[in-house]
Image 1 (cartoon, rainbow, N blue to C red):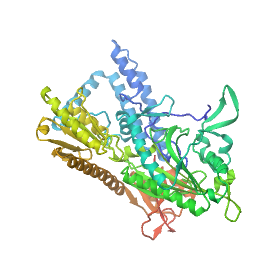
Image 2 (cartoon, rainbow, N blue to C red):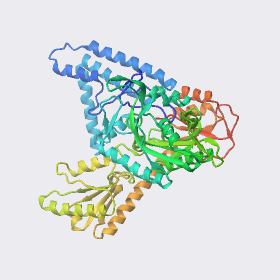
Image 3 (cartoon, one colour):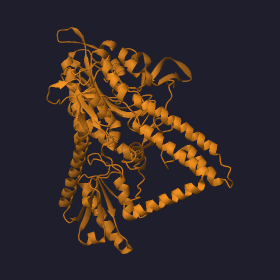
Image 4 (spheres, rainbow, N blue to C red):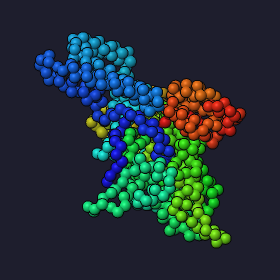
Amino acid sequence: MTIPTSATAPFAASTVGGSHRGARPRPVVAAHVRHGVRPASSFALSAAETATASSTAEIDVNAAKAAAAAQGETVRSLKDALKKGDVTKDDVDAAVKKLLELKAIVEQLENPAAAAAAEDAGAKAKDASSAGNPSAGKDVGVTPKSQDFSRWYLDVIRECELADYGPARGTMVIRPYGYAIWEAIQRWMDADFKKSGVQNAYFPQLIPYSFITKEASHVEGFSPELALVTRGGGKELEEPLVVRPTSETIVNHMFTQWIQSYRDLPLLINQWANVHRWEMRTRPFIRTLEFLWQEGHTAHATGEEAEARAVQMIDCYARFAETVAAMPVIVGRKSRVESFAGADCTYTIEAMMGDGKALQAGTSHNLGQNFSKAFDTTFLDEKGETRHVYQSSWGVSTRLIGGIIMTHGDDAGLRLPPELAPIQVVVVPIAQKNKDKAAVADAANAIAATLTNAGIRVKVDDDDRNSPGWKFAQWEMKGVPIRVEVGPKDVAKDACVVARRDRPGKEGKEFDVSTVEPTSLVAKIRGTLDDVQASYLAQAKAFRDANIVDVSTYEELVAAVEAGKWARGGWEGSDEDEKRVKEETGATIRCFPFEQPAGPHKCIMSGAPAKEVCIFAKSY
């Protein structure tokens, strides 16, 4: 297999761009953080090891200074790139943090006594802080979201065992807990698609390169990301094969054979598959060289039918986002610049992540006759005339999992909406004496059986190797919506304690919940799950709405973007104006919302009357 000559990079701390199916955004330079212990830098580790191993004062201070100087140059370069919108503030902050760590190493090597005194003072201050705050220093393996959003995201994926790094750079292995979330997404989507007459099929992963070149804008949009197979069976292939980046071309090749007359229409096909795009900068679930998705492809007799299907499917995605993922989205139309390569029009759902950036969580495209004309996909109409079909395509991917993490997660880790949580309820038996263990275990298992029989996803954590407190923190970090605690006193009262993930501490606990009547217990748990689901949606909506700013001038737009907000305002600008905004601020037009605020509106750029408003924001 051969690939484009551009260099690739493993999962990074931050990227800027659209969704898998949207226009191809510019990647950015970002800091790479591997899982495990989070080191300051590889140099920091080697310097520390040298300091430990050496019994003399002959430590290479110059090497430390050189590393710090090199990092200083990196920081300056990133700051220049930030002004152009090529990198994010998170990237600069990460580089500055690394620089400070290297400078601290230099100080330690040059003046060990002073460094030791400073470290001792810091330890005493931390002890004093912990004494005044019992929760201080609590470590569940995740960097607090409020301290470092990018590192928090990667920590959550690692510690919650959602995914891991693949052996090929830029790929990921989805672990069972993460894949269970994807399976829940699949179940809902697949059932909803089939209600509207869509059927599943599967198309080959290897596509002749000539197929990609048939639609001009399509090959232009995807060419930098293609992975090509040039050898097979020990021989050079007569024609290179493209590893599927998307399937519009091969689908049309088959549609041409399957569609003969108007009686064969509409043709509504979906496939669940993997695709490959050679991204330069990757981030787990958000942008990887290989990812999982569904892609729908339809053929229609009229343009109106294709448009109706494209809108129907973006509405489907919006329903899923809000009712299942508890992720509020803004539904709208993409600009020409941001539309899918080969589409007449692209529709999108845009979600606001916990750091204020936008995530394109799903797209639907009205392809018009662009692909059908390129592949000569025709049908005989009722008058016996030959016509080209009209088409739509639409898809969501494992990027949704990243969106759920970044929408709902908090300092403690993951918070999963009950509708998608692989485990909705964890039951933790608490018995400190051997004589209590059997009774407590029986009560915990009885509760689990009652809830499981009612269709609730339950796990009993009866692992004696870990304390109840450790289990509470662990399942809180993994985002389980409800924890049920059962101890000897609860057994004596035929009761349990119900704790909610959306409300920390005692506020989220309800004591003496009766377990006598199974139907009452099930009703209680179901009601609480519904409350948690609604709570997550309400919290996410409140955060989003508080971070959308209405602007009327370009200066106001720049200020809003610099403040990490979404800027909403009138737009009648040109494609060149849109590109200028991206170059100067790093923000792009996320969409022209379907739900438009009442006018009149003025264009942000020119002040001229504007027919509609759009939303500008920085994005993943």
